[in-house]
Length: 148
Image (cartoon, rainbow, N blue to C red; front, side, top):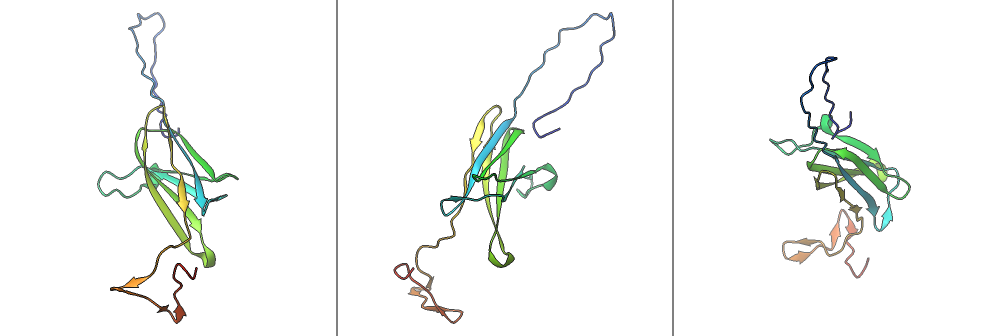
C-alpha cells in the first residue's frame, strides 16, 4: 500500500450480535510542485520524498518515494502520511556532475502543499577573499557583475 493508506482486517461471525463500529477515515496529504532552472521547467528530473529520521534528520530511503518531472516540470506525491517530509530534486549538470536541492514540506491530512524547486544556475555578486575582490582564480580572470 502507498504511504498514507492502512489496511485493517476483521472477521464477523454469521448471526452474531454486532457491536456498533466507528471508522475514522484520514485522508492523506498531497505534495506537488514544479522544478525550475533559470525560469524554465526541468523535464524528466528525479524528485524524491523522504520522511525525516527522528534522531538525525537524515532521509530514510525505505520510507521514501521518487518520481520524475513531467513535460512541464510538474511532480506530485499523493496519499501521504501527515507530518514533515524532505523533498529532494536532482539535476544532472555538465560532465556527469549532479546537484541536489532539498526543501522541507509540511504534509496536512486532506490538503495539498505546493513545493517549487528552483535550480538557479546564475551567480550574482563578486568573489571576495578577506576584504579584497578576487581578480584571478585557477589561472582565469574572475568576471564581476558588470562583466557578466
